[in-house]
Amino acid sequence: MSPIDITKIEREARQMRAEEMQRIEGVIAARLQVYGQLLGATALSGLAAIGKSLRALFSWNPQAHRAH
Image (cartoon, rainbow, N blue to C red):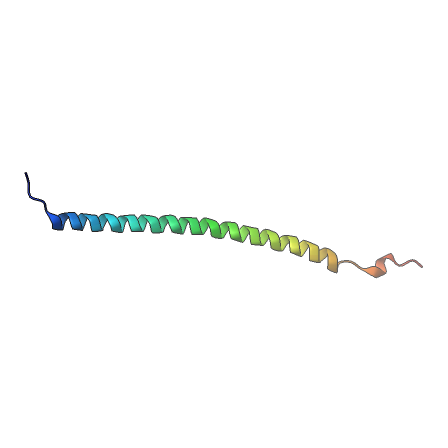
């Protein structure tokens, strides 16, 4: 039986852990980017709807329908 190199095993385990942490950070960053884009699109859509409603409200002119 060959001797067990504990130092080598620990080094490889640390390296694997570091790689996995980087992978997880990448996945989280990608998901946050998608969520940010969705949130931005939703906010923009909501602002457009509010703007459309306000435009109709402020474009109303009571004098235009005045009977002589």
